[in-house]
Length: 260
Image (cartoon, rainbow, N blue to C red; front, side, top):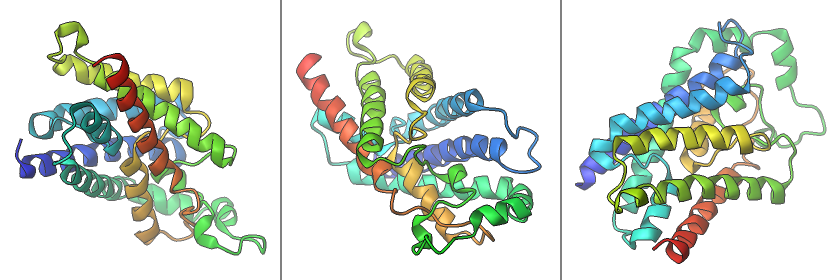
């Protein structure tokens, strides 16, 4: 794969991933959405289908990493780091593009939601909140993840564990086929792995398990002209970046010890 193919494939794929994954969060959250309140099952399957669609589209160009943690895990497994920056660049750009497209698709719902007096009240800061950029706004959860209980050690550990499960499942695909991979079946398996992680491990932090899936939309949230949107919670933002990368390193090391 050429560098241009990798960059284009990862940009398109991660944009689709973020558009559809963020879209299900918007559908369940925003006022005047037909799917409002559909529940956690809809979130987990929505993200699983987002992975499925994005990976099918981008796999012929880039191999459909769509996630810096996956890229790091594969690099540790294969010892090939040359294309890692290209993967990272396409993934971050794609995540930002996808977040913007999601906002455009739900533009009217964002306006209705953020003009509702209840949500305007939720977005207002009190005197105990001196750093508005570190306070999660009422729609930040559509763009990025956040913890139910804010505990740095637990939140970081949850992201490490969830991402290690994802990356190890990806790295071990194909062992039943003489190491040649599972082709399109692997994409389906990975999608169900994402659903399973969301159902089993998503409760504490919202299971970012992907640095750009969180960071790219968080940047877009900070930049978009959304009235009464509140802060982007930059104080938490490093956890869904560092945690998945650490989880990927753990999975890559475990693979090399146990399976290589």
